[in-house]
Amino acid sequence: MTARVLINIPPTAKRGDVIEIKTLVSHPMESGYRVGFNGALIPRDIIKLFVCTYNGEEIFRAELSPAIAANPLHRVLHGRNRERHDRLRMDRRQRLLGVGIRHHHGRMTWVRRLALVGLAPALTVAVLGAFATDIPMAERRSGYDLMGRETRAMQDDDNRQSRHVLGARRRGTVATRRRTCGQSCASCHGDAGASMKGVAARYPAIDAPSQRPIDLEQRINQCRTERQHAAPLAFESKELLALTAFVARQSRGEKIAVEEDARTRPFIAEGRDIFRRRQGQLNLSCAQCHDDNWGQKLAGAPIPQAHPTGYPLYRLEWQTLGSLQRRLRNCLVGMRAEPYPFGAPEYVALEFYLMFRARGLAMETPAVRP
Image 1 (cartoon, rainbow, N blue to C red):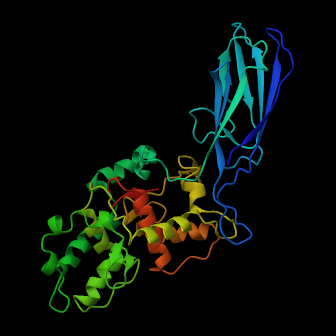
Image 2 (cartoon, rainbow, N blue to C red):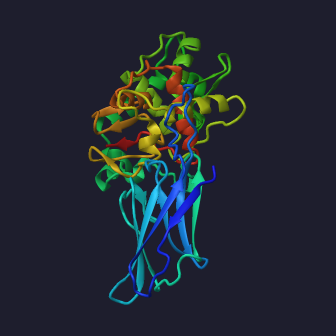
Image 3 (spheres, one colour):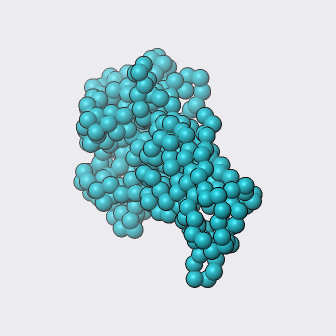
């Protein structure tokens, strides 16, 4: 929507005077997390950028966050410093991001300026709105980039990885050769280094019989039940984690490239809706942490962008290997929401969206995280 701006300035000002300029922007500042009367989420509609110019020249700008209240009020003070240059200070209401500063709420932007005389006819304010979008491709970063030096070193050196990861690699290698009902994984797929390369980077994927997406763990169990006529492995079991990690490791360094077509788009959209939906007693959504506050810290750990580039991975918090669904369950519990059972279609849809969101990033399995 178009925002209406009211500007309040003194009628006159002398060179060197300290004056106050106030602007009131008429705008609802919908965060995209509120639910309307019909039970549906109200689309995000926020002011992203506030720009003030004098005689056509920009004198300051500010980036606003979704936490800004409706009808934001801006207060600008104009004065003179000891170097006889004027400067403008922008005060804030609620949370305000300074120019070029991410995740430092409350910073004020200072812009030096020569003394202003006769402000009224020349001062203009531009307000730009934006709807919610995914993190721009150029700003997408793996959680690896946000970790400390010691944690990155654990992931970089295969020989320094935990006994859980090393054990999973050994168990995965053995599992591919173990015969069940006369057949092993290797009986069909041969050398995993060749046949499995890039496979994990394309999952979740649409299962032809059900026409629904399944993730890599579900595909492995499907092969066990339909091809090997064996019982499926339990979710989060050492055997399933080991086999999944072994298969995914063959895609290390490959770019994530899940399919986006007419069949997959409804499930990607379903995952996006879950990602942005407020849930639980804390009334939080995934997007509030991973879209709006990535790079900041929660309980001493950096908040990532939620790109699942390394699952199954070893978490220092768990002291063992775990799947992406386990991590999603942890987040739901932290939001005081009811978690879905392992293998639920909601998890798979969310996995699909997260992998789509991470497209172009490299696979890191088995990764290490705090």
